[in-house]
Image 1 (tube, rainbow, N blue to C red):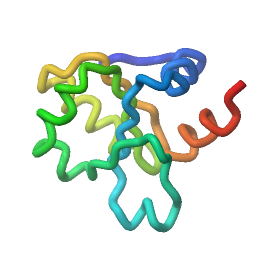
Image 2: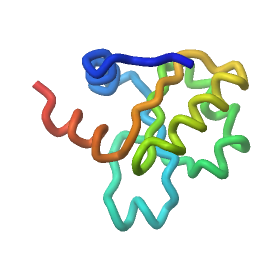
Image 3: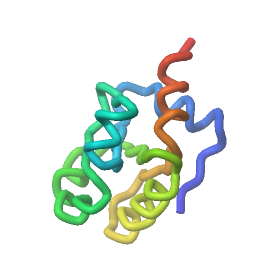
Image 4: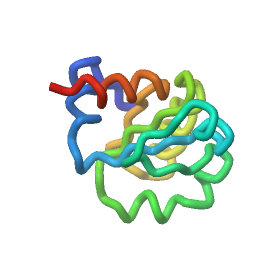
Length: 102
């Protein structure tokens, strides 16, 4: 599994060509908010969207509400042969990185 240090994660998330993959449920997006440039694919649907994810040929940072589902999805995507997949943890973490960019 690919791990990033906090500074590496910040740099990765702030790069506009990084794919941010939000694996929360739709109700969580409506309740908690969403990140505009993130692609929303609920965890249960990721296996049906492998081609969509793999053809993008970009680094992927996966996030969810707290980081449990994102870790599972990252592991699954790596097992499916998708490279450059990183666990971004929870939504609030990714949101803070983007809001407080320098």
